[in-house]
Length: 275
Image (cartoon, rainbow, N blue to C red; front, side, top):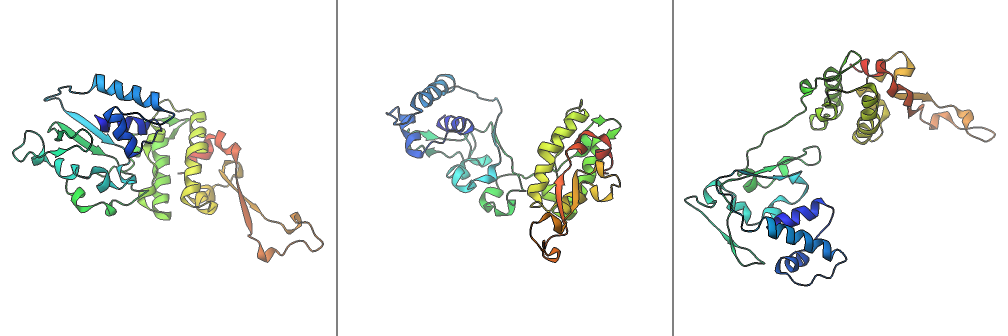
């Protein structure tokens, strides 16, 4: 139960130090500006979940982006208890003594633990071997074929497939864009513009460290003949934009600069010419 409380508080943006967790669990005074909040949350869990019997009912414990932390340290002694044969009711059942309540603790055999991992942030190769053998790993790559939406004759699935093929060549397969952005079946041009302007373009800027030439390649801008359909505009630098008698030495300057073409987001042809 203490773990459930801690997870709830973390999800709501509060960070609890270990000493504070112990005080809350034992009902001791907590010197913190959020004292009332913590106590109400604790009492809610105590009232609704403590000593509840859920025998036989399957439960799923989900840890989102599990690889962002030190997984071995997070699990601690649970690393052994989560094994199928070491769970409550099994032949080799094991338990540990909880540090605060001093009560024995076992992992029920009806609890399934799922951890999501974003391999673009950190490779799964860094995961502890002991932990790896206690989990089955299932790769979940983008599945553009799940997208059913079409906008003015544009098949979003084909557009995303083209984008991801280019990202895979220019960067790697771990950074391909997921289909979740486009799962709304009622997508309209305005929705598409919002997704590209506020999600896709910023993501590509981060991927390629604002190397706009590569972003142009991903979005097919390098093949578009009509400038108004290009998401990224290429502008030639001129020496006369600099003040001074002799201007600037163009040999010392980049030949082009880039800017985002905001009007392109409102034109369906900008998206159709990606693929």
